[in-house]
Length: 103
Image (cartoon, rainbow, N blue to C red; front, side, top):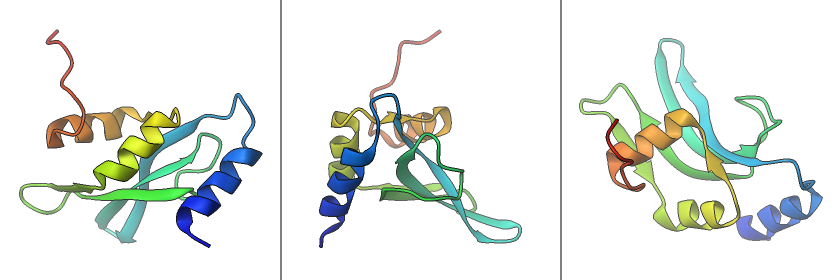
């Protein structure tokens, strides 16, 4: 069974009002944060169950390192997933989302 098949099975169980969010989940050791960018149900806890890993974010590297699979990001965005504010900022900085108008 492929990860896509698992995700499709999960999406069938998700109710209409249950949003899919693209957000960070914390990994790494104490005082050494490392984050995965994941697609998860909006009701799941921060470090809880997720549907798919989209990429990683390492804030300790200089400059900070953001690695994202553009295909997976596009797939989940087309399914109606909404990025959290932090992930949206990271994606804009890495050039994967268009910059909004200046305020």
